[in-house]
Length: 121
Image (tube, rainbow, N blue to C red; front, side):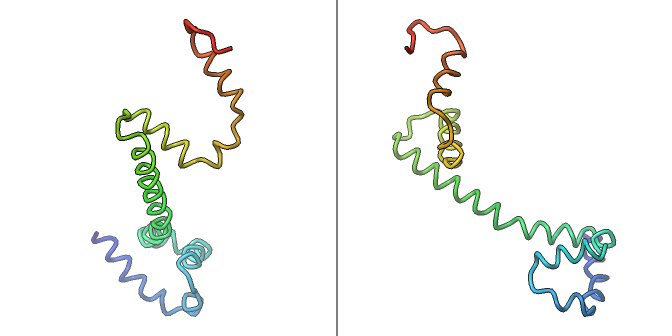
């Protein structure tokens, strides 16, 4: 924390630069830090900026996961085990990818997994 505080205090002079004043977004700031190699001089400041950029993505992913879990668990009356729930959530969350799967190939792969008492075909 002390190192971060010191870097922010020293970074204060950077804020006076005309290049810095023209930055409009956090993304621009992040790119500018790399381009000017200030990310090497102030690595902790750079890390804070990159973490701030990832927050919206992290939040959206978490919210989407909980929303999907509520939909799946309600439909199955909360009687499913964790592994099955995890598999259902993965398919629901990544439904755009799952829609590209060929059902026949999934059935074929399932049949090849182990020998069964009853055949599928």
